Length: 481
Image (cartoon, rainbow, N blue to C red; front, side, top):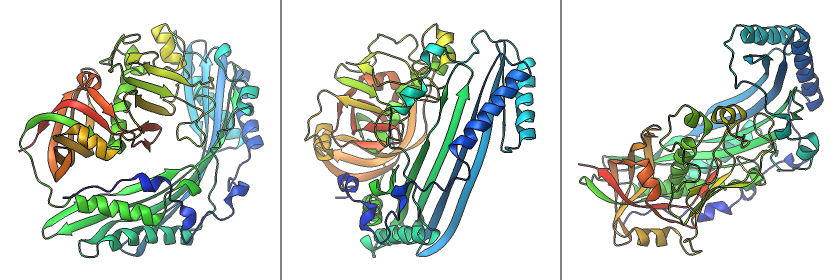
């Protein structure tokens, strides 16, 4: 029977084993055009000019990003793209009126024009009693920031030729997995990106840092007769040495595509559903959106007034940790310069805290949680999970039902919690994969779904800033033929 290969091996296979490795990047050669001191002067000049022309408060941030992206297809180079961008953003307060403007021109005249534009917007904007910079007591100090090393910056001095070699190796590994059934590909790609910024405002915040993100991906197409199925895989990391090897990525992507051949529809039914760990993060994302400030103060959340209430089973906990080394969601402060902290968001299924910036906190009569700009590294766990609860064990727990490996569509209605998404995956019988399925829709109410989580696997996967194992739900509607 078709069965997706386990992805556990990908976590320990390093790009350093490949033909091309991290060449001299540990010296932190930045490749940036602008220095941190230059950005500090730029930001200070913008804030000083804002105060000079009458701003009550002001803030500014200067940033720069650059990188390389290379794509190949069927053994041939397709695209080589280099990107470099820069920006200065300015926020001006006139009383409780706020204005924003930005520019990519760092000349003195352009800075003054941008500050003036933000000031003019503020003057003609309606007063908002909640519009203000964060309270000074909540601001991360320079000493606090300096004491935190999150190891986020590992620039990769890869050339376009070297990146192309890696992408070609990745695609070749996919094509060679089954020369009979994999003869086509949507291509493979390698990306090396890095950025840095400095931000400050008149309530005492000064901070910034550099970060990097490297990635490799491939999307092979498997075919047997008239049946064609596409799947793919990728690896992303702050440091290239933490990427999976191109061979491992290619082989696993090919195995996933092969496992989908001869997919079929199933009759409409109601059954348990197991979400594969890479797609399970969407469940956590829906929960976060529902308990985030914007949705709460607009009363557009199906979890209004949920603080202190049970929204998940008692065996479920959700942790937020901004201080994970090399974490995708790590930061020493939020987008407003507010200090962040590790915390338990959900404890024994009960909401212990929302996700708030200073504005949404004021609207709700609460305190900021340091989440302006979004959540930090999140992990959903179950006290029932055992070390041996890998994918095979989770399939056994599923018994007979649907194993979802890919989802399409927008997902959850934030106001009502109604949930409906296109899906594909595998039908499982008595804990064993029976056959692949496609063209199905899974539906339910998100509130009910959250309370119906029966188990979380030990097969954890990091997707963006969320870490999840596979998730088993007790029952969902599955629309098929």
